[in-house]
Image (cartoon, rainbow, N blue to C red; front, side):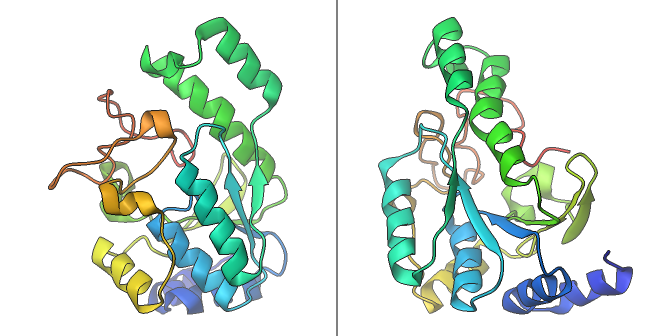
Length: 230
């Protein structure tokens, strides 16, 4: 579907140009998953502002911060476009809570990964069922796991292309875009929350810490939930 020439082209294009290129080449089945973080707000702005035929969706895990819902509402008002919301299966959540406890993710990495699977991975699978290209806000700087990710890759597990338009952006590039385009952000970012996940699993980071140090802060794991693992 995509040639080496296409990949070379994407590497040269701006964010808006790359999104337009992808959505013009694949007329149906281009989707973007937003967690409402700073990188995702950049891409949301570029998609909605340019009226691109790309479905934007988010995962509501049921354990998000209030600020997530506030920003989602503000996005809908500003752009006059809807972000689709996917929820976990209630039966899965109920079974987990009954058998292991409401905050069982603190007790082991296995419990935490199971919670992520129920609340994130399974809903994502539903959201990507008919997708041909999945756009993400991943950046190489964010963690060691993402340093070598290409701008466009084939996801064998999900049988689709994964497009990472910000993979070579610096955090300063993100901040510059947000400021120049007056993009709304999560209020949490000004309180030291850079990478924001579920409320019980996220803390503010200290100066000099890795951006994802606040995610699953009680663990020494690779700081991934399974959405973007290889």
